[in-house]
Length: 239
Image 1 (cartoon, rainbow, N blue to C red):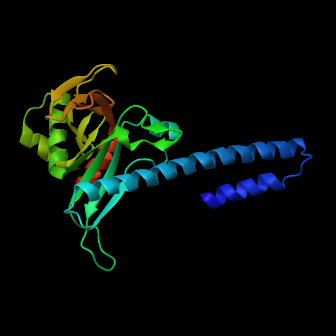
Image 2 (image 1 turned 90 degrees about the vertical axis):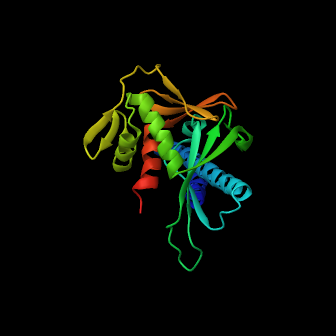
Image 3 (image 1 turned 180 degrees about the horizontal axis):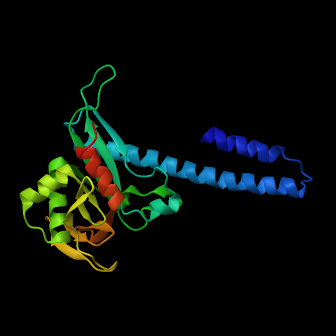
């Protein structure tokens, strides 16, 4: 990416000073590409910064983890303005046995970074406005069970668990293959159904996302349906 931006700058510099209309059009196109390139580079820089800070949090708070991989689920294909409105950044964390060409075959966890207003500015990411929360597959299933209960009215926990492990949470409910097994309530965009999940958070359902109300900071953050699917696939579908 840095090489591409450098090439575009060189092309812009080498263009004749007495530009024709065609050259002016080319210059405008190059300017647009430079802006796009700079935006992509900014997001990539934020991604690296976020992964570094998440890794530092793991090292400081999870001393038992001595060999692990950590990768963000966010940022790819996103613009800076998209990320500034993001309220949760998620990271896949998986342990492995150290050795030559190791395989990622150890315990899986997901690290959430719950953000507060103003966490991204022209100066980058302010990690003082990010709260970290680490979960494993058991905690994820517990969260999803509570979410499905409040979103559907289904109360049979064992049935919900088995359906979740076989299927996926989609916009309309929980599907197994192509069949909708647990349909969700149809709500308007400004309607929420709430359950008191734990001492740390409440979970909210509306038709677009999983809402998490953080009791400590009183922030309402949202995990989009696409991210729910990514996390669920990471825990239960990936090799």
